[in-house]
Amino acid sequence: MSALPSLHTPEDVAESLHVSAWWVREQARKGRVHAVKVAGAWRFTDAQYQELLDLHTTTPAPAGTDVNSRRERRTDQPAPELRLVARLPKRAAGS
Image (cartoon, rainbow, N blue to C red; front, side, top):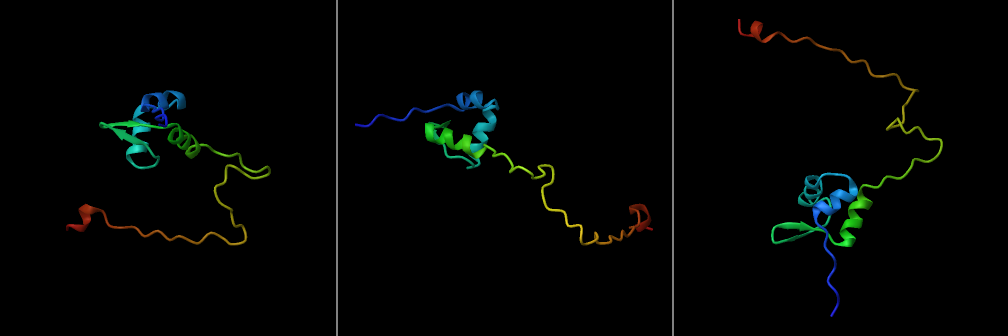
């Protein structure tokens, strides 16, 4: 007979990740991570705990990239002209 996996509570996971237990339970409730619900309480196996870590692990940007810009800026085309149109105030529309 194989040994049962160890199960971690949301409080255990939250403490090690330095987040709230509510946040851990919310990730499981919304289906963002796999979890086991036993008798109405969320539990995480070692593999599911690792999945939660992997999901929120970032990788460093390659050298020479601007980490502050989220998309490439196109300098060859001018920005489109945006014309604003005023609307009547609500009190003037009723008269």
